Image (cartoon, rainbow, N blue to C red; front, side, top):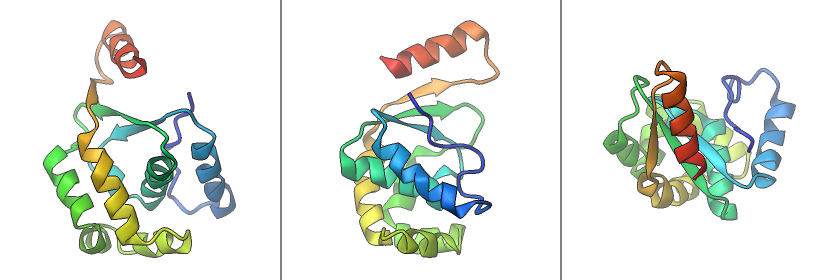
Length: 140
């Protein structure tokens, strides 16, 4: 299983390589969403999730303890993505549209699936056994 989200995925440092991320998503059996406070503000994360959702690739999620993901706020953000994304990340809409992903289409696709995903809790500061248990739950 490939984790498509890395810490540099939307940094803009190497745009040619970033475009290949979508191909990797489309070659994946599943996409793992690491739920953190700003993950849904990051255009390349949104693009990866959108690619998975529109291709019928399952999205599973890990709710990362202490990383500020708010389920209600995330649902509201996706519902109003056309107005909330420019506020949270002004350049993100341009990135989406440059990749032929109109913000309203992304909003509709992700709002229909992300809020309904059952998240597996992950405390990365927990014991090795607890982390293994969370990963096992995710895989199952």
